[in-house]
Length: 446
Image 1 (tube, rainbow, N blue to C red):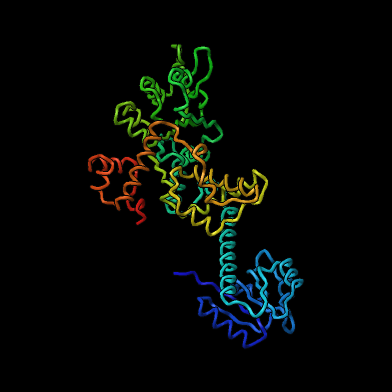
Image 2 (tube, rainbow, N blue to C red; image 1 turned 90 degrees about the vertical axis):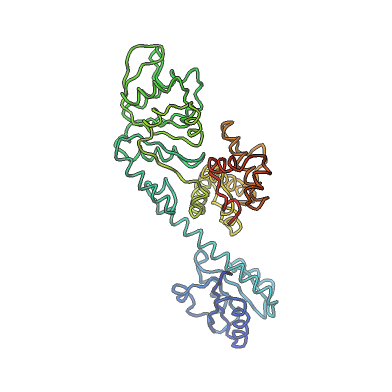
């Protein structure tokens, strides 16, 4: 269903008003008429239209007088028209903030297109203002975990609840969903907030130095466990913890006591454990490279984060938040969110989740700093700059996900044909779809 716009027509010529009313109403506009510009300012406060079409020469207040009296920042776009227009008048009107200037008689098609574009611009501007107003009103956890979807509201409630107890929490979700951000929020809202929050990305620690890095060195160099004393230890990428070190880590978590690498002297540390894992952790449990007893010690409470594609209503608010943030960092006004930008944001699959959205917002701001750009261009990154999964396992999963998605589309969702095209059995195809978290209906656009 086409969007309906409200237009206010101001003209002292009754025949012109009636003619414009018939034309605009027949084209889907909701039309209000006025013979004078006097008092329009007060009317706009209670009944603001999406666009105003006003004659220039009228008794009492003229169209130019009305234009100069309105607040450019808040009033709807104003299109002036005149049978006596000339170039200086048109120039003055545009300098004073008119959306456009038309000479009578005008092409009806041009008028309709002009009013439609002006109304769309106004609606979009209002939407951007509402988004920024909502952002400026956010505080505390609302400003950290941004969104108004039901899943995000439930997540904020969970964070508040978990911050008040000492249970170990395992945070699961796809790459880029904000697992560390949530862990920090749980720490910051809890009684341990004055003490350290120590994030550990286990995949970045060389296997040969894992125990020394985690438990500390014999020379007295503190490890991550000692640094987290009194605070919170956040273990990210659990699947990367060496199997031979897992039993020692399990004991340290259970007893809060450990031995430094190369030492028999006991050390202690009072820390709370928050941890994070993704599909790699499930694979590690299945192939035995991650101990079940450690897993069950860490997953006293499991907090699952939803992928961005499953909470699309939050995308405009998040994108506006990030463009405001990067606008401030780079010293420019954040670019306005156009209807094309919004449509592209909502249609993208966001495999990199919020992290990808943040990157696209930064590219958009940097392009605006150079005087151009769009969301479409920000999404079209050369292969050499494309984000690459951090591990081989993630890269293979991303490739399989794309390959299966392409086959689903090419074969119109017929599973036997998809399996045959991929050279695998139907059962294997079903298992991979479940494992990769693919939604057939979403892939096919149903």
